Image (tube, rainbow, N blue to C red; front, side):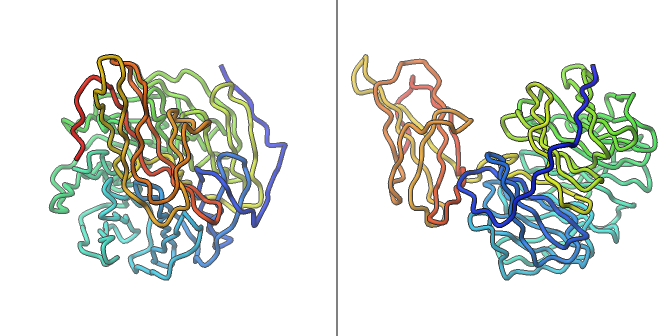
Length: 406
């Protein structure tokens, strides 16, 4: 089944103060800016100060956005205030970028066939890894143990061991590999090949190709749904998005979008953001494949990053305390992040209705009168005086064990 989405409702607002999270960050090379899209209410704002920004990536808790530009610089956006920090890291012009899950290192793949590793403790280049051939994309496994680089020049994927920043394996059998996406659990890598109109799937445990998905048309980049059910692939050749079911790697549906290139999916799996070479970013409702918003006013959006595509970097701890055989409660605690004015605690990942709002300085909450054996999910959001907010962590708690928190 093919779903046609027409670009007809063009909306573009600037200089709007956001009040909710999450946000999407879109690189716009020609206009030397990064546009910030509020995922909740579809308002936008513009951050200037770049020289042809090409790639953007966020740290694990979404508080910093790293922007690589064609002038060979990495600049940093504070996402809690959407301001450009006075930090500049010089590298060869970047092609792709990835951030380690613990946010200790930024891996920058550059057009001189090197990967520069930047320490975030002092924003210095600690290592430069060589030996690549027309590298195109880089991704880090969710456990942080390995990074993977696509080499269009020799048809391989290089495997970097992050503990010593060394290339330890090479996966062959590709034909000019371009984009790379890893599944949420890190078990499989999906590699787009524009020259063969296909995707090759490799197993990260064996570093071998295990499947090929045909029927695509000049596939460029892809994004994985957070529930691991689907991979979304932008086909620049025929103006479509292919939806691939990961259980059997079968193309189950397509959506028509003019000139799709960069692509990102929200953490709840409900929305898809697509950068079109026709100068727009399209937001698609993945429940019924309908257009939500078309953001116009771009030149050629080259990369999109979503704050909620990343797992929270600050651990939220939860445990159960037995008060009586019939009365238990979960104690949820978290670490502070920045200088928020308050915290909101939710039990649903959509962050619809908070169960409590707590003042700044409160880093613990006891959720009372719960049921033994039932799973409770908690999400902590920090709110700031300028109207911004940041999800700082989540935890699932099963109140059947004694509290182990200090």
